[in-house]
Amino acid sequence: PSNPQNDFPEAFEICQKFDISEEQMREIVHRLTKEINMGLAKDTHPRAVVKCFITYVQDLPTGKERGKYLALDLGGTNFRVLLVTLKSESEINIESKSYAISKDLMEGPGKNLFDFIAECLASYCKEMHIEKENLPLGFTFSFPLQQVGINKGIMITWTKGFKCDGVVGKNVVELLQDAINRRGDLKVRIVAILNDTTGTLMSCAFANRNCRIGLIVGTGTNACYVEKTSNTEMFEGYQTSNKPNMIVNCEMGAFGDNGVLDFVRTSYDRAVDKQSINPKRQTFEKCISGMYLGELVRHVVVELMGKGLLFKGLNSQAIQEMWRFNTSYISDIESDAVGVHRQASMVMDQLGIRTNVEKDLECLRYICQTVSTRSAKLTSCALVCLINKMNSKDCSVGIDGGVYRYHPHYHRLLTENMNMLLKGSAKFELIVSEDGSGRGAALIAAVSA
Ligand code: ADP
Image 1 (tube, rainbow, N blue to C red):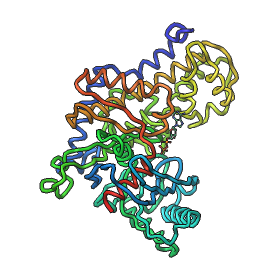
Image 2: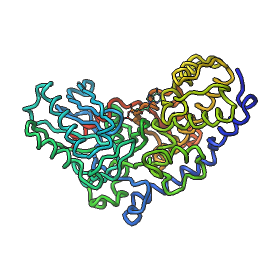
Image 3: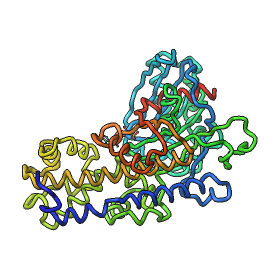
Image 4: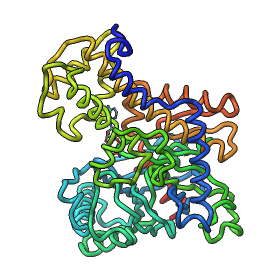
């Protein structure tokens, strides 16, 4: 196969800017540890960037939880209503229905969004003939949330393309409960609000008692972990609680918002940040998650095309359009075997660029690898940071999100880079967590109802 280093020195040079050395990775682990400690401590929390919100979830599942629960999942591309029945440790029945959230709802008044959610919930309950049952509901709400109780959470800021007025600063459980009550045709109690990371950890922990971290690498990125209650100063009972553990939602996507990641960021990161609807926020997330990886690749490709160095003589409206390069294309392109460029060619075709020039397509693959490898390296830093923070010698990590699930090499890249950083000081297992926002929500409803 062609070698981008020789065939495309300019592309190679650009890609080198995305490369993160081992030394830089260790520095990132160090800086993130510092930010997490700031988020945890009461005196530094108000100005901390990585907020480390306490979740009020202090019990991990025992495997003995049973019963019927409703769950709502809001926080990504789809909104879902779920009915979860915990029958036995090995038998969990999940029924669910997805509803698309229109751009109008994502960017309109919050009241419309919550009325829509309540409407979906009502129609689902009628469909399932459970509208008369007084079921407990776990609400998976995957945006930065300051929890004040297991079923009370104040919205901090929107992310991932949402921007609804009248929600930031409010208790979203109340907003939803009010919307439900306004309808008058439903008996539902919201017993818990949680982040998808917490659901992911709980869901994984139901079968893997060793699970101590929940990680999302999907539209956005975030992680939670099991902290000693005595370290969670933002929790009133942190010194007196008889429960030794507390799940902490790091809100890790914001790492770097104060500039501490600038030493590894590129001009492409800054360009994508600038065009996003939340400039200067979610810096770490913008280097890692599915919402942004494709766009980073597109920026590099467009620059090389503009200089006449890639896909020479070809152009299209689509490739010039912001956000048109889906992160799933990266997975497609990297799925091609060495020396094969079938998927790459198909992706470019979808973007209005018809070509079979091997060198160009190889260069495209190289750019994709560069961007996805950096994402995996940064995620590895975060996981190693948490493993060290917990002083864990052996734990499982429950993971969900499209990037982790579907990228052909992400799991391997995480494993390799974590091993490189840990140098055998701890063992870990990376496990896909099934349905954290449904099953996890039900489990939290079960342990807290
Ligand atoms: P969400 O994070 O929105 O709740 P998911 O966890 O399913 O939902 O992640 C969806 C995200 O995963 C999409 O926004 C997209 O960026 C990314 N994604 C989807 N398909 C792929 C794929 N084949 N390869 C890599 N990333 C993907």
